[in-house]
Image (cartoon, rainbow, N blue to C red; front, side, top):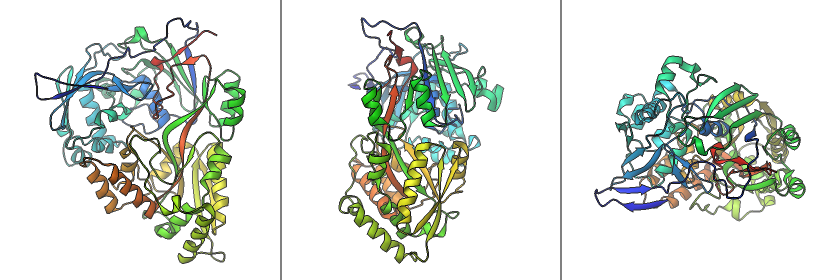
Length: 538
């Protein structure tokens, strides 16, 4: 990302080096006649609405149907989307985005600054009931908190269309990573006219109007999503892939079988199979760091079990689970044992030292856990019973079984509860759980994307961990010249209070067909776009 100073004004302009925002096919490469891509989804897409979706897999689809102000390249660097560049005021509080005049909706209408204004107001509007309304607050958009709370009308949100192709955003605190936050689907524009004409049905195939490189032609919930190349997209002449198809297969092993049979071009590698597949298919099996962390969230709120309100019990649960067994024996795909929340590969982040992670071995952790359980009033004659909930996946099941066996050693009897994804997430949002499998994939490459989630005002703090000291640290981090020490303080509070049990930091462990090119291998967010991809001739 290049920076230059505008001599004509007092603002600083951030000029993103323009790239042909489409597939970059090297000279001499022969393209295959078949330019289609079929990929795997574990679960059904809950919503095709950018302001409603909360799922990673849903975001993968939405990035192809819609386009925000900026996108990411294969290295995770920002490149132009609807915005070609922007300027920032000297105080860092006003962003002015210049939008391309060639951006169009799939119905042929021009994309304008007002489409972003409508979308952002819609996201913050309590009537929308978006779980991502808090994202406007995280972005520090002016008046976001009051609008989200319903104390101020949406037209007071700090976003304004200066004209059709100039968008102004006012924020209350300078955020160096603010532009990075704009690749998130919740900030994408949506078509007001289509939404008002169709209500909740506007996202159906054949009705949905998007501004991305593809249009939605079929959506069989829990079965398939089909997207066709959008000829109204501003870079459509450089888009090579003509069709993207996502198949929902709840069984990872079955998905791998279908990949090996040639039905899929990409699939996650099931736990324990990466070493074998890397040896058999060295040009197809890949493992790269992935900006997601896997935890067990504990329900410490009013509806949670009384035992989990005792910090000694929470710490004991965390200490007793052997992460090395999970990553080295069960997963075996390059994942890393986690003793904290924020992913190890996040830019500029360094995990703070802690006694349980850095000074104890696993045998010592188990002994400490047993003592904590006894202090809390539990033991061999009085075991603690808890329910561990996870969504349908053979990998999640394997980890849950292993964790339950490990916890049995400290006098905790675990009952396993398995639900399909929608039911699992609905139960979590309603605090209808004791412990629940949860994973968070960062919305951008900065530690606050993890740590803000555990604040009391977070829209995803389903375990209802409310801690004033934690909230203050995260609030202070927004105005700190260097927030990293405060991020370490936040992690330390999580270690002391243990409202979550970190298990491992993800790696992106995939089988990718050898003739598929353009998927990112150096982007920790794994942000991919069908328009950047192509299939080579064999």
